[in-house]
Image (cartoon, rainbow, N blue to C red; front, side, top):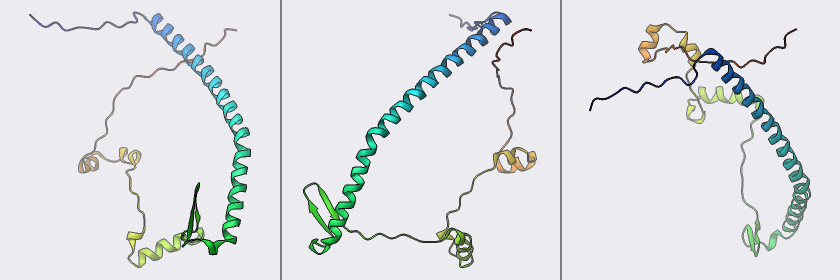
Length: 165
């Protein structure tokens, strides 16, 4: 049996059909906008309700944390090592460290580390500037295995009809 090539006919048959399709797209976009506004209003109500209910609980947690810390500070000698295990959790102290470097001295620290040969202590991020590369000569792009691909891409703009005077 011979193969037959299936040729798909466009659904829209004339420019009036295309214009009607653009009108339908515009109406769908309006409906989506209205749905988005409704969604945002509902989310705002939910967030407001959550904040209203959560604030007293968050304040109670902060107050209880402060009370627990005050008590443990006063009874630090009773801890086994640095902590004490209780029924509903553990309280204690752990050693933590934090590097302090004023923001004004960061650039000086980077320069000093480079000068001392400690570049392994620096984070260096490299990436291509694609927009700048697109403007380079083809010869340079060939050397790095790149090329600029140009093509016509379909687009459409939906416009609001202007009322006639």
